[in-house]
Image (cartoon, rainbow, N blue to C red; front, side, top):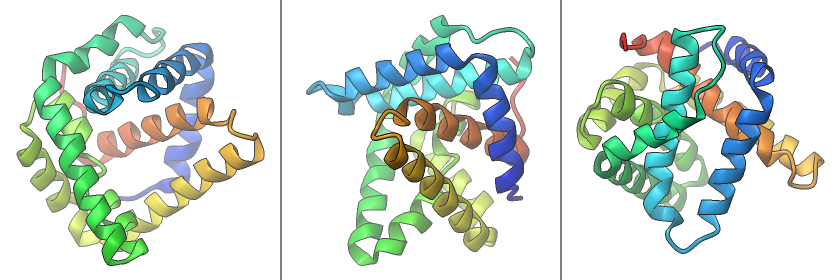
Amino acid sequence: MVKTGAWISEAWELLKEDFWWHVLVALIFTALNSTGVGFLLIGPLTCGYEYIIMQKLRNRPAPLNINDLSKGIEVWLEAFLASLVVGLFSSVGAFACGVGAIIVSALLVFVMPLVIDRRMGFWDAIVASWEKTKAHWFEFSLFWFLLMLLAGAIVLFTLGLGALVTLPLVQIVIVLAYRDNFGLMEK
């Protein structure tokens, strides 16, 4: 099921509730990505951040627990491999056809949430995301395209500073889409 507008609206409300914590996480992502080891940490960091968002959804109205960002380290290998393989598949999609990258990214949008929430191995998460989205590949591709278009427009119109808002917004939208398509595990 795809509810692009509803997910973006709910994500914006969640972002506003803990705005400065989300900005801090975006700064951490940015700092680590600017180092030579950023590629080793982006998958686990993404999983940790999505775990924080999932915990927020489970325990509303409690504030974000930034300490849970380290939860991604618990699934470091699977998160790293998932990030690497999804990146490779998206690159192949981009080389084959620019639109291919959007389609592949949309079909694999739930990989990281599955790794952190259900503790799936990277390949099982890829297969589960693919299986869930393939029947509605066009809707998910349109969702992903619109989300990336919105994020790009915000970054462009704010001369780059909008990345501190779009990174959290995109991650929250992904977790909301995951919640509505897979449900959150009880923790």
